[in-house]
Image 1 (spheres, helix red, strand yellow):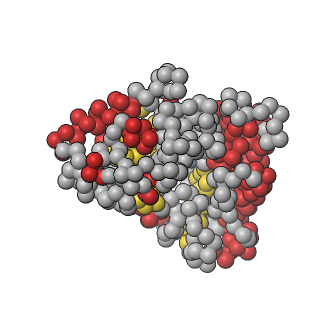
Image 2 (spheres, rainbow, N blue to C red):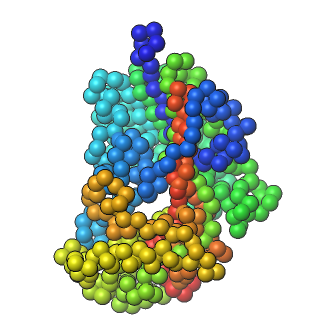
Image 3 (tube, rainbow, N blue to C red):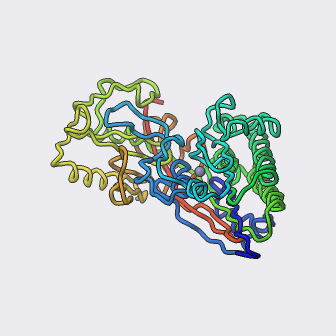
Length: 445
Ligand SMILES: [Zn+2]
């Protein structure tokens, strides 16, 4: 406390900020972030398991692990049936987060775009919903009238960029810069006009720029072409964000504590592995009929009475077991559950790459990772190839062996080491690992 005033706290969240870029490759061009580091402290933090946006931000702000939150990914099983998967929105977060404690203590808060805040909830201050806000026609602010204020200032406000997996890179680049400009303009407006003891914002552009442009920057990526026209997009964007951070800090009192944090980092994704395809080959997953084209898992004719395991994925895989007395057509006897799970974990960890070399896969049990395991957890959480590798899917069709030669159309990212934080005008990086993973399969491409 200085001058009898309690210091204010500003948290600047930059989703997917990559420590290797922030602290090494780009450090000399990021004057504002570098200044924060020099005046404070910085370092790497480990993200949660799995190291992805949902649940990582809610883990950070609640200090509860994903198991306690019962949020294991973007989509979670609602119950033990086979077909009820639900997106984890802010409504799924039942533990109090920092702004809830502060609101209760009478402190004023501003919460802008923090993943896990749509739908918004009452706070002692202002909340603007996150990138999962389904549309500007929805009520995405608290209080409701702030929505009009946002519209007057930055219409149309952008919670995210549309279709960040597009191949229209010019449009994507322009949208990312536009979104970031609007978010920071709104942030400065709130800092100037709202009472606040705690201010937090999260910018998603740092994540989207990695998804869209990593392969243009990373010489190790199979699709990298030296001198390509998008090679400067990521460095230019980092510089742009650094400038916006500098402007933001002009609105912040000198004695405020400033933290720059991230939920995970980024790394190239060099191959893919279709875990469900592998489960089929091993006889763990049985279809009544094999599809002739890439098919969503939910649309596959699974022979549940003969299936022991299936998976959902993305950057990491969640493997579910079909257990008697738990799933509707459970096959694995409850007494055999642990031994089956151990065996399957060992087999998954032993899956090699397409050259027969070890991939270093990890198959983790939620019960070993978390203090509590609420909701409906996966039976195994799987990272392939240290999260560089395997992804899954429709694109890598029919390959249960990871191939370094078939990166998906989507390039990138998600490492386990993220970047984080600059307390007291200092900094730390955060998080995470990455992943690979999988869902489906079609055989013939
Ligand atoms: Zn993220």
